[in-house]
Image (cartoon, rainbow, N blue to C red; front, side, top):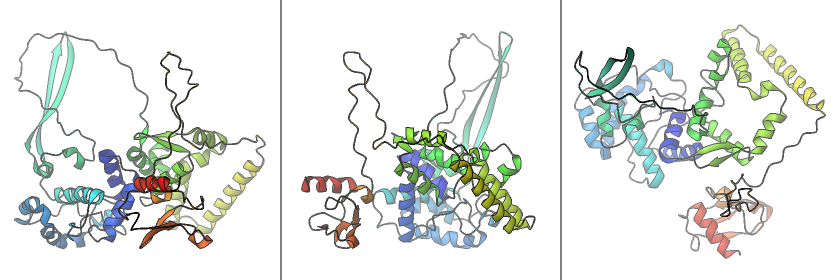
Length: 417
């Protein structure tokens, strides 16, 4: 895994946000059970190869899976080891340290990383690809499918969804065709289906991360698109915080797993007249110039001068905009209006907005001062404004340090009615 593919996988499997996954993988790194997480490569460097058998031996909870690998020489494949694909840090892998102290989501995340690491050294999955060409009423038809001959790496995920280790989005239930004989024929019942094309699906955090990673696809200029290949919008370590910032500013909101644009977000995009600021093309332009500076084809001083000119032009355009447009940011997310029992769907009796979900201690407003948020100390919970004089103290004897943020918020609400 690299960080983005790990965030995508966790969002797909468990609905975790990019920020949740980053927080958990950072915790695993600090507990020394996985390697550095903020990486953008799925490859290992050549110097890691001699350490692989030792790491696999130490992964005792997975002894049944690692035994076939340790009984022979570990293959050194370019699909796994490639120095040219590694910059500062290699892909996220287990360190071999015991994960016995992990509980809950941390254990689930470690298990996901461990299985992917082990599967990478298993043999390829071998299958027979079958293509059937037929003809009915003078019209040609084609069907394709496959039959697995040797499961290979799929043995690691036996009894589980093997798709969790497949980046190509291929379904785990492979289309297996029945036996066919060349030249066979038989009766058939034709049928017609009337369908409509569906609009593009809303982004989830997983698909949004992938879109940010490959934002160059939205740029028409081939040279700029090439320059953006390695970066897209943001970096692996910053994409989660970019998304969270949009949530905090209420430009986007969640509806189940989907990410929706709020009216404030839509208004913001409509308000900005500078098309370049709203396009991934700007990132492409800058990346292209930086590549040229690396090669010595372009001056860094000229690049900075161009930036100053661009910013100056944008500021002048904004100052000269006399439309006086304003953006109203709602306190709560839009709530769908329910159809009343009488059949009136005018929505006058709109459903009462739900309180925001408490997912982090930062979400709990201090009940004493009403301005700070809750912090977790060594012996008690307190307020983030303690330096400003807030005296709130919730001892662990009364409020367990193991409480979830939501449960803690509920207890505080009861105590400070």
